[in-house]
Amino acid sequence: MKALITGVAGFIGSNLARNLLNEGHQVVGIDTLSDYYDVRIKKANLASLPPGLDFREDDLNTVDLVELLAGVDVVFHQAGQPGVRKSWGADFGIYVEANVLATQRLLEAAKDATSLSRFVYASSSSVYGNAERFPTTEDVRPQPISPYGVTKLAAEHMCSLYAANFGLPTVSLRYFTVYGPGQRPDMAFTRFTRAAVLGERITIFGSGEQIRDFTYVDDVVKANVLAGTTPDVPPGSVFNVAGGSNTSVNDVLGLLAEMGDTPLDVEYIDAVAGDVWRTGGSTAAIDRALGWKAEISLTEGLSRHLEWAHATFH
Image (cartoon, rainbow, N blue to C red; front, side):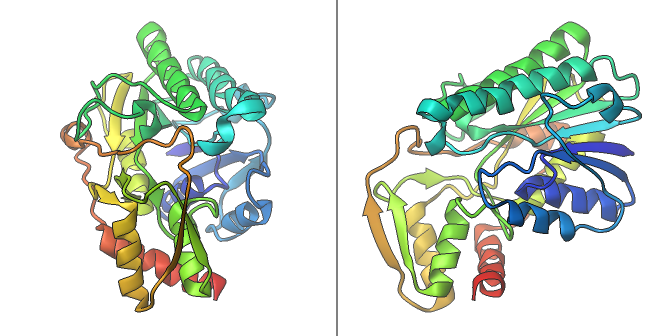
């Protein structure tokens, strides 16, 4: 298989690339190496990969996509501008360009790529907003409450449109709070474990009673591989990728304190506009269609994340 991974230098993209390269697949990767967080981290992600990656530092909005997609069997579209908090205000244009316009341009090129058998899009549980019911199934009405969520939903709808109108074999995966070694520095588990290792204060936005469905990165990689390779998946399919933890942030902090056998210095500040109160996804649909279930428990995954933090920050 020849795969194209967009956002290959990121957290999930680099883990996916490692998996595919280790399995002997041909991988082309593209990334703008944007400065949303320290570019050195992204370069380190790339340097850690096995040999064989054909890497392009370029922008999906300007690159020659016909050349990029030549001979590609599966597109794993991981690229995009992340982050709920920064998506408000003047930065919104960046989100539209990176999440919506880049996806539309890639889809337009993909519909004419004769070798393409699957287009896997990295969507987000942010499309649900404060969902109407839990566990949330894919047929629940999306109602994002952040500009970030709006752009992720718009790009997901574009995937469904190209599937319906052109038969493009898209699959959209709605990720629920992905964590694990190498997670972005601005995300909760890396902030928590880094602070625990260094004895620093942990800042929590809101009361800490908000509930999240945490999903380990290796499980997310497996979901992508299955979405890209399982035959007879209907074009336009949408699946939740959720770990099933349904745990409050405060409970995570308690678990982390137990693992480190030391109290944590926690400060609570105002909640951020656009942060949802609860997430919790049903994975019955992806289990039926792809045979996927999360395998890594929160306790095991957080332990691995903490071990990585000790090795990285201590």
